[in-house]
Every structure is written in C-alpha cells, then in structure tokens.
Image (cartoon, rainbow, N blue to C red; front, side):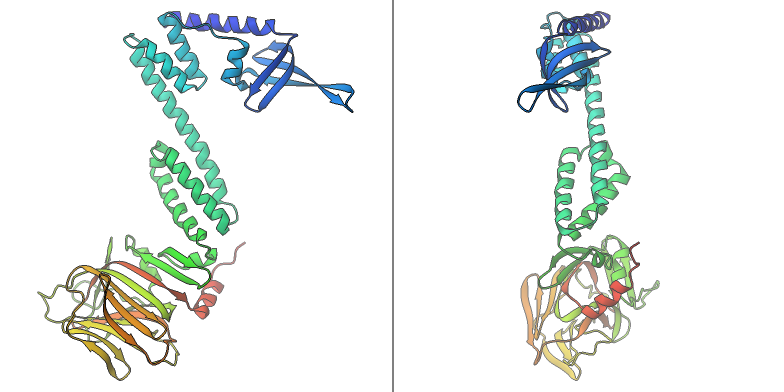
Length: 421
C-alpha cells in the first residue's frame, strides 16, 4: 500500500508540473458547469485561472477571467490535459483504484480492481469500493429525497400531482433498496405521499380529500363520481361511517374491528349499525368482500342494506335489500317488493355488489347477477345504511363505495374544515 501511495504522490507532482507547463497556452476545458476556453494564466492551489476574450461590436475585444477548481473538471478533460501513464505494476493498479474511488468513478475503480485479482489487498479494496458506492448512493438518495419533499410542499394541483407521482416512482425505482427508503420514518412518509398525490392526480378538490379516511380509488370530474376503498387495515377508516354502533364484549349489537376485517352483529330484528349519508342513494354502487355466514351456530341470519338515509327527504319509496337464510328480498315501505328464495347469498366466501342507478337496482354475487328490480321512479334519496337482525352478522374484509356525493352534505362538510392560513 505504501508503494501505491508513493505512485499517487508522484502522479500528483507530475500533474502539477504538467499543468504549470500549460501556463500561457490556450486550453479547452469541460467542467461540471459547462465548457471553458481561454488562455491559462496560472495554476495555483488546485485552481486554474483562465482568461477568455470576446468580440465587442464585431471588432474590439474584451476579456474575462474565470477561476476553475481542479475538482470541477470532468475526468475526460483532466485526462486530456494531463494524460495518466498506463498502469503496469500492482502498485500502479492500486494507485489507479484509489484515485478512481477518490474521484467517485466507481466503474473505473472496478475495472482497475480486475487487474488485482489474487493480490493480498484485493478483498480489502473491493470492500472499500462497496462501502464507497453505498455511501455515495445513500448521499444521492438523501439529496433526491430532499428535492421530493420540497416539491410536496408546493401548492397542489392535478398536473403537479401527476408529475410528483412520476418523480416519486422514478425515485423508488432508483433508490427503493436503499437504507434511506428502508427506514421506518421515510417508508411511512412515502406511503403517505403516494396516497395523497394519487388522490390529487385524480383531479379531486384537495379539500374533499380531507373529508375521508378511506382511500380515493377513482374520481370522475365530469360525473363527480368518487370511489372510496376500505381494506380495514386501520380502525381509523371506519370514521367515515356515521353513527356507528360498536359492540361491547359478548353477543351484543354492533361492529367489531380487527386488522383486515369488520364484523357486524345484530341482536334485534331491525338493527342499523352504521350509515353513510355522504352519497346520493340513486347513484350508488357498493362492493363487499365477505366471509361466509356461519349457520352452524344459528339457523337464522339477516343482513340488510338500506338504499336511503334515515333523515332523507326524497319523494321516491324508501327501499332496502335484505338477505336471510331463506332467500333475499327488496323491501319497500309496505313490505316485500320482490323476493327470491331460490338463491341465498353469503353461503360461501365471495364478493357482493349492490347497485342503485336511478330506478334500477341490481345485486351481483361473485360477478353473477342474482337479483334485479326496477323502481317506478328514480331513487332520489340521500345516503345508505347497513343493519340486520336475528342474532346474526357478517364479516367484511373489503368495502368499495362508488357514487356521487350529496351536494348539500359536501358544502356543509367543506365549510366545517379549518380555514387555511
């Protein structure tokens, strides 16, 4: 190693001498800030002093003087000014490796190391190169992350959100396996930013985003249809449900949450355990992933979805869809509007989709239509609710709500938000 250091020292002395020999001559340099051309006036303290001339009015000449740090020169430019002797001995290759690492030219150092295989310092230098590369990459990741955070603080807009998402994806592609990204604090912030800017990129009013704990999966600015997704990974998501009844221990009416699922249980014959008044009832699609109802313990079960709000003042009949162990039904103010006892939902794990679009009501289980009904007039109510009865309930693992927000609810909710300072 000492011999290699002496090689580096002699190279440095030779470079200094060569550069001083260029004083008074014209040079063309490539730097990190762009090209520099002119006469080399001096080389002092690792700095090149350049004098450049330029034309004034096409005839007279002016001059400017620029100081260029040796460290700002590109590797190619420095090599052109002062060619490095080709390495021959192991000491030369060690010196070349050390010089390349110092100049942050990892690829050059790696090629130099190939000529040292079998040398006693090979493993040590490989380890140092790996450490240097990792450190440099982490430094780059830190700088890129700081730039992203600065952009995240800019005033939000749909176009900026789309650009931010692209830059975040590029950052993760390049630095996704870095120690920085793996740190819990940064990983959590990345997840937060992804969700925030994916929502903004949909074109949704940033204030509306603050109204929901569920994830915004889609938004159509033309139809104003918003789609919210709930995977129940956090109990916080259930804050979007209004007037929720939470079940105490034992067989009591209410909701029970645990990570990844929401269980309902209804003790009475007509319990309602949560509602969502935010949506127009006649432009609504609900999609539930569920676990089959356990009928071994109880011979009866009842799950009911109300396609109206409890305080809704719409003129259309208030209807609800109910499933029991005997069949499924559409109920109106005076009783059953339609019944089907041939198909009984919730018998096996699956997906239920309940849709009300104007006067048309449809139910699908695992993609297959199992129930349809046409109301005499479009559903003009606001909101929906979930309930049931007869000592039964169901476990949901995912909920997706898609529909138009009630303008009156939206205006009131936005007015209640804290004013931006």
